[in-house]
Amino acid sequence: MIRLTICFVVVSLMLAQLSTAEIDQNTIVGAWLFDEANGKVAADSSDNGYDGNLVGGAKWVKGKFGNAIELNGKDAWVTVPAIAPLKEFTLLKWFNSTGRVGAWRCFFNRDGWAAGYVHYQFRPDNKMEMAIHSNNPVRHPGWQQSDFTADQNISNKWIHLAVAYSSTDESVRVYFDGKLDAEGKWGPLPGEFGPGRIGSWSGGGREWQGMLDEMLLFNVSLEEDDIKMLMENGLEGALTVEASDKAATIWGKIKIGITEYR
Image 1 (cartoon, rainbow, N blue to C red):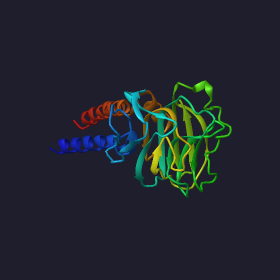
Image 2: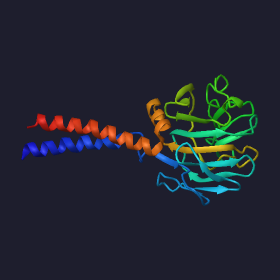
Image 3: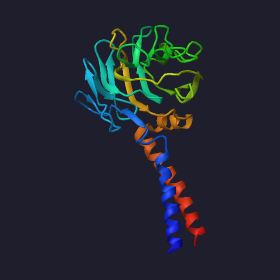
Image 4: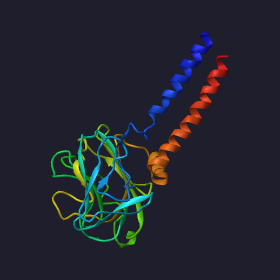
């Protein structure tokens, strides 16, 4: 009976490790997969209730994973409700640019512009910037030296972009297509995303032209392997792979533990 109790404790502790995965439902703040085929609501698959609303000429099209949202660069975007400030975050998505090269183009901008507000966009010089108002500096380090520019060379192509940030560690990493593009010391403010817009800014004139897919927001600063897994498999696929791999590893440990206590 004692051996059985010990085995049960070992199994319980090992199974509890499944909840520590960074790519899991507990770390997802918002997941706008844009897999709907019609309607005016972009569902938040995180179950946190941050459903987006389609505005203007936004429409559903075939995407990188399932469907995507297409914006016309004029009067189309997705509104997102209030989201509490995040001390750490990773924001990932697939994008396909079809126009407005050389103009401000937003991925995800918090309404307004005040301390802690996140602005995530391409600039008129075609450099990507992740900016947090009142951070030091305001724009993420390395944006001016980035080899990646949103010029004609990437038009009409699906590109993956991810930014991992920690105000606690005052660090940031930027990845294009899973490869580290820029990193450095950055902080100290948490990032605030909502109320905001996907594909636009409340100040106007920064609308996205093209497609967006798998817009994901986590409350942790994900590592490169996690970012690559999400890029290659999409959220649903990554969650399946993560759970399967960890379950196999933990089951192996469980069998060893049971053997040791026999």
